[in-house]
Image (tube, rainbow, N blue to C red):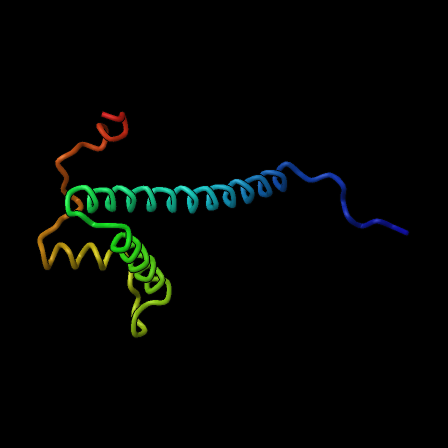
Length: 114
């Protein structure tokens, strides 16, 4: 029986395979890191709500559930319209003048752990 499939790949084919594997790995890592950052941020917010505003376990759990519900709504959209985190940012800016693009801290300070 004749084998029509080549055993050796060309350099171009190998590069293409490697590039695809790298892209898949990066996509997976990005999703993992994004989720980790989101939950760390939510944990900080909940600690502030507990420490400064007296939120207890039930309220914090209800908040976590509500936030996760909000993200679920973003996956499906609302009334046939896209709904994203940018809509939340815009709402807070328009209604309460809370601007997440402005901060009292410099990003480098956070990165260096200061």
